Image 1 (cartoon, rainbow, N blue to C red):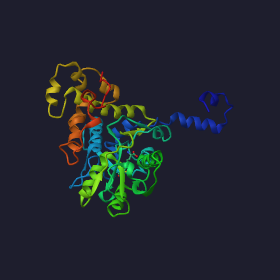
Image 2 (image 1 turned 120 degrees about the vertical axis):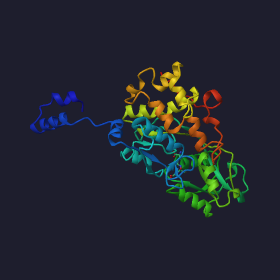
Image 3 (image 1 turned 180 degrees about the vertical axis):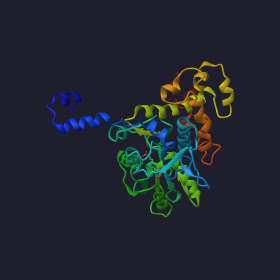
Image 4 (image 1 turned 135 degrees about the horizontal axis):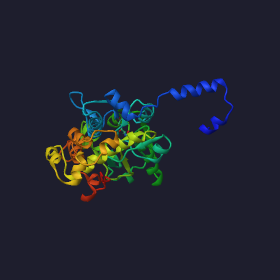
Length: 344
Ligand SMILES: N[C@@H](CCC(=O)N[C@@H](CS)C(=O)NCC(=O)O)C(=O)O
């Protein structure tokens, strides 16, 4: 019912009471204000995906998604350490976000129409362009996914992975025996323990899973990529100012790489006379204020985590344990598809 319809009614006393109480109810605080008041960012991450979000030997969270959360915390709260990480399984992640248990999900989550239109969520851009692949036991003697007819395949519930698996086998008139597990760890143990011949996951995660095997040489990541998995941070769709902040942290990380601004040369950047670098550092323009942030918001993101290239290389790149080449995740000007709108 519209407000105008309520006003034209012959209201009883009870309704008057309700309206009076509504008019004195303070507006619900947006996520940005909630995070500022709380002093901590609540970030939903995976339960353990090497390179994206897992704990180091000291129990500290690390990874590509973790660094994104740290950048957001630094931008909003001025401190990369002010993040509480909540590990979430694939099946529980979106309910946790909808239920306000986290402010932001940075959890190798694929941007799909259903997750936005049906779940009321919004993807604040793409941080990693991924695709689904297969890790197969060498004993199977296959070198392509098209030879997987009748294979036993382990997969985690509540993922696009499970849906793509079904599509791929149907489209190629093949059958498979699906073994579904509630967590990635269970799916991995089942694969390692011989309950299936093949493990399917996002390609980026498969490389890490292979290295976790007691004998990595006994399994092979097949070359086939059967889907598009654009991974990115997710927020609730009813909070546009927060969505804008998270989205522009992502764009700032990419723009910094393009501008040649990194954690190693921030002091120089702060003295730069170049107009685009001056807008980035907040020396020109009033963008921080417009976002509800400090003028140096973008500088804070880089100080916290480095630019996109630094985050990628540290966690996933050829210098890291995983050694994944940039590929599609290279800047548009370098043969990839990373493209951030201008900061102006
Ligand atoms: N990108 C896909 C898959 C993401 C996903 O949750 N993958 C599983 C493995 S198939 C995973 O990483 N699980 C880690 C965990 O449960 O913590 C999606 O958004 O549905």
